[in-house]
Image (tube, rainbow, N blue to C red; front, top):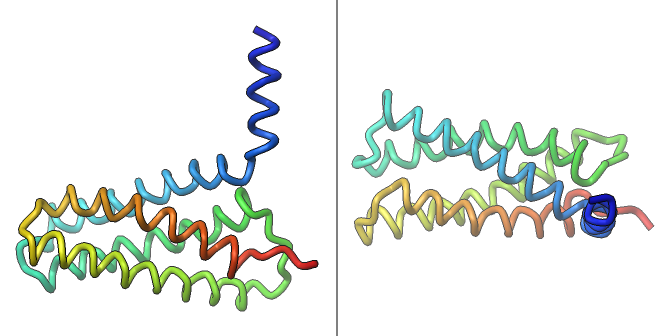
Length: 144
């Protein structure tokens, strides 16, 4: 049992950032989906294209807020003193992936008629990967 534990610790040490990102990304996805589903179950109609996108944007705002603080602290261990600049870069990168997600939602739901919840789940996988790349390369870059 100790050998297995040491093996798990070694794997975690080698891939800490990616593992933490998957955990935080998963939690961010839960926030995004929960807010989206709450919006569409209570006051927004996903069959209306404008309301579908409104629900998506509301869920995005909540998810990005959660993601910035958790990524900064638990994934990239940022030491950046200028948090406003860092947060601005983070939000800008997330706006880019929001536009990607809106395109995916429009294509899947509006153009192809696929269930909005299924398209939202598929979109989340694509967005998690894109967000990691942007965060790693643009937002939380380590200074040399």
